[in-house]
Image (cartoon, rainbow, N blue to C red; front, side, top):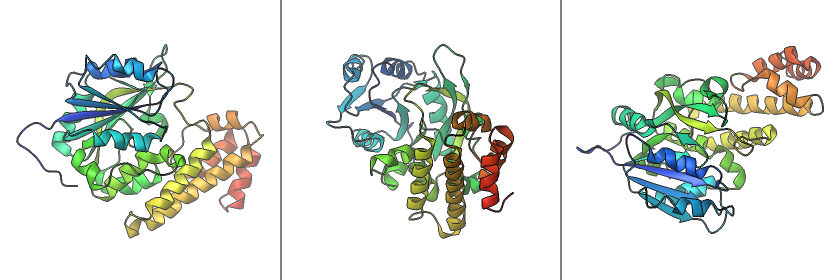
Length: 313
């Protein structure tokens, strides 16, 4: 996607969204304050928290170029990010969830990469549970960024872009910002944006080393795997409206994989589900590999039943 250039260094803004983040937001804002490349503007949108998050954020306004936007009602992450975009006038935009933490060179690394490559700059990230050593994020869940000529197809199959990415405001505006809808769409709001940007020609470049910590806590990860799979299926159905026709078969395959995975999940109900799902390891790739791993781990009868029913055993 083409991006207008100026002879001056692009200005850089950060959008932070929070909801019930009083226990974490100080660390998030401290990590923004400690950047080697300071943000030119920061907009924090609080999505109607009731736990004291707003009061904590106000304490940072004398230390940072920070504007606080308080949503009157809880409207979800897509609406909150769009509210932040409406208040931000910088050339580039970095996203941060209010419970995550940036390492000191995050904005510098991503900003420098964007000046060279444009498009979406996805950072490498680490899982972080306070009190424990960080551990790799990409290797467990998503893998690394594929070659440019295969990114859109691979992105249809699986979201490999981390949320705390940086991109140009021009590109975001060109695709209409974040898609607002029912609250179920919030689960895939980031993936939806990456797909629409990639469909317009934007490429993804990954940072060379980890620059952000993804905080692990009770509310940070989807606990309902079935709900997540259903949301992803709905997202792929919506994506048919803007993806090129030559990817129709890819979309069909990606939806089929998730339906099969959902079928596995439902078959496992009451059959040591938690142990079985953890034993299989990270999601990704073809659902058959997951089923066969499940068959060899703890519930061979369940996985074999699904594989046979689909003619793959």
